[in-house]
Length: 203
Image (cartoon, rainbow, N blue to C red; front, side, top):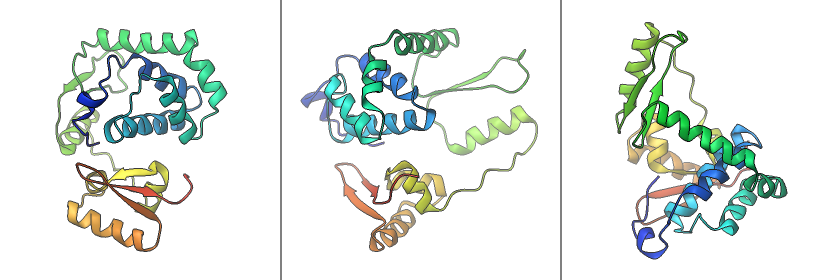
């Protein structure tokens, strides 16, 4: 997701601790809801330049993605969410994860160590790693129709659509504009790039 660099000047974030706990609290209402909350959090910090250390901002994110807000606030201040985050920190420490992004791949052979990949690489690199670990060529899952993809994630960048569907940026925007004409999405231009908001209820 693109980021407006002025964020660090206009509304600097001292610590991501509160947001990290909030992600754990949201995840207690289901993995799907946790992912939607995380994406909304990224939107408000990177595009809207809001301060996600403020509880009011976190609560608005919870409302936006349809969480049970009372339950979310309770979990936000619970030991359970804090302990879940501490558990994540412990795991990252044990795996020597010290930079973002880092992916650790494991296979079904529990006695074998995982393969840690730090930094940015192409999608094809990760596919190659998985094939090497599995020692087979797995069949990729079928991509959902673009309309379903948009309905699920609700707010996506042209670049995301291009990467997921193997299109050029121009091809992706052409497909998105077709959906815009059908009033399926609304175009949301930002400082760096273009986003699209689904007008359909999340599936």
